[in-house]
Image 1 (cartoon, rainbow, N blue to C red):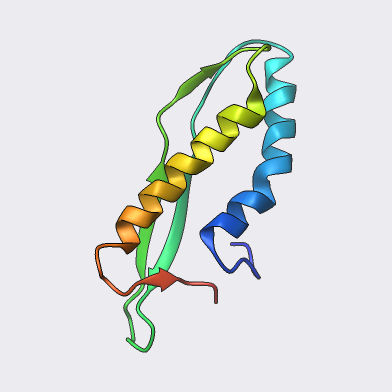
Image 2 (cartoon, rainbow, N blue to C red):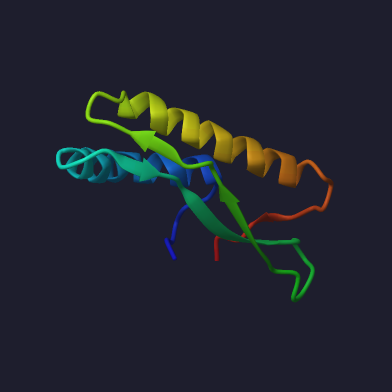
Length: 99
């Protein structure tokens, strides 16, 4: 669990550089299938025992040496952020648990 990450976009930004390095290194050998699944805990403020684990995932993509990784990661992050937005817009009152 990463501490001091206050929101979903901040977390994605914090992993972007390392993710790019890992993907570039992997693609130096062969094409790869890539997908990203993130799991977070959400809670309702002021409500005891209201924690809920939630995951967001993007569909698998095939990446090649010539793939624009910055663009693909950007698309993946957008997909994940849209999924979180849909989840939070349901009016549940949940917020990302940063404790």
